[in-house]
Image 1 (tube, rainbow, N blue to C red):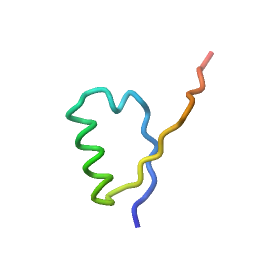
Image 2 (tube, one colour):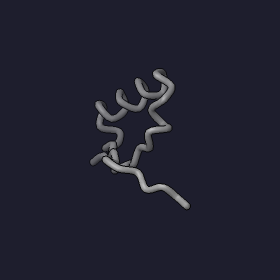
Image 3 (cartoon, rainbow, N blue to C red):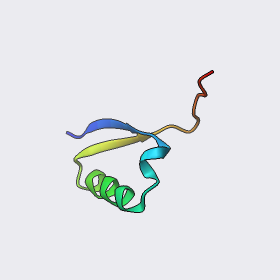
Image 4 (spheres, rainbow, N blue to C red):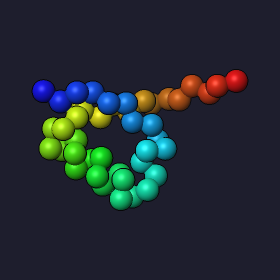
Length: 42
């Protein structure tokens, strides 16, 4: 069973890292969770 992992948009900026993360998710290494909105810190 793949564990859930929250991916921030910053993790998806370099295309090589994006490719790696999506390939690992496709291999069921983990289950990516993406947030629709981001809370701003003040």
